[in-house]
Length: 232
Image (tube, rainbow, N blue to C red; front, side):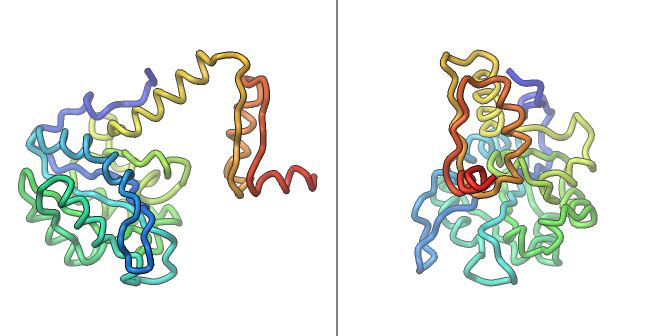
């Protein structure tokens, strides 16, 4: 087990909880979700909060919008999640605007509010503390269940944690599972231990590669990154 504070270590009873999810799901040209595994993966954490009498505010990004556009709205996610949970999902028209704040303030125990695409706020990707403070002000507890964005210094991932003490922030079940798996893999690997790393952004993986080198028997670089190493 890792030293990360788990959602199970937090007193959630009847509190308002912010869950940072990863609902960055693929869609077709008609905005139909073609793979909902990321949405399904968030359900255990959401249900655990509901079982503890919480009201839940969900937040995620979708794509890389340059401006507010229906193409990147989380409304299709709200509809799919409502179907999976068999429960109404209240959809906010914005992130920290009047609609979101009013709905968050009036949220009752057992209800779920989904904020609009976090990246509709330009401050999200800039790790803006003012945006983080606005998000934090809506709730009493912060839960990160978005493993896929944990490496990003964004407002809803990094800056927001500054507004909660250790008793009021932690990892959801999905994030905890991923961390524990990676931790056990690194500490007790089968040999030979081979790491295959792909993707296109070398800069975002340099630290991970540096940390892996002394632990693995072989490191294989693939994807777009391979060209950088071939050129070096």
